[in-house]
Length: 120
Image 1: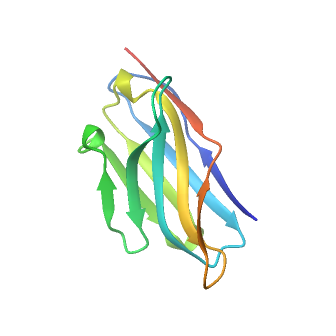
Image 2 (image 1 turned 30 degrees about the horizontal axis):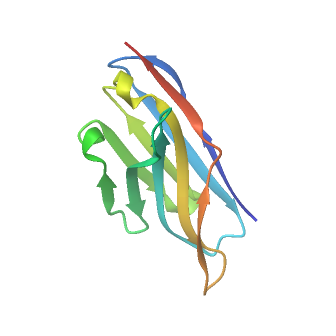
Image 3 (image 1 turned 180 degrees about the horizontal axis):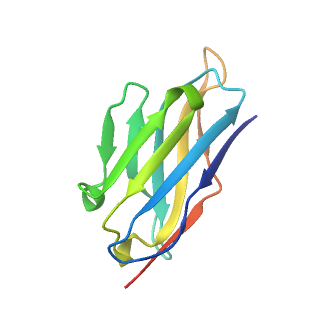
């Protein structure tokens, strides 16, 4: 089995910073892409940022210039540095990994989510 475990959420004032971490563990053959999604109350889950195994990144327009995604392939970890946080960034943040458990099959895996609350 594969598990994704997030950490680093919390309460912060507007303009502050937080760093989220996520570690993938279990029967992992390789990880193609890792990313962060978020879901605010009453809204659909949306992509925040993603990074491939080669280091290519993709960001939602709303976080460009404020958030930075990075990963440590050796540790199967992905990070999200969030700066200049705004109240509208408040959401549950989910770690995602598109990975192979063997040579032939790839699947999406999700963490349990971590709450980020930005007060005004």
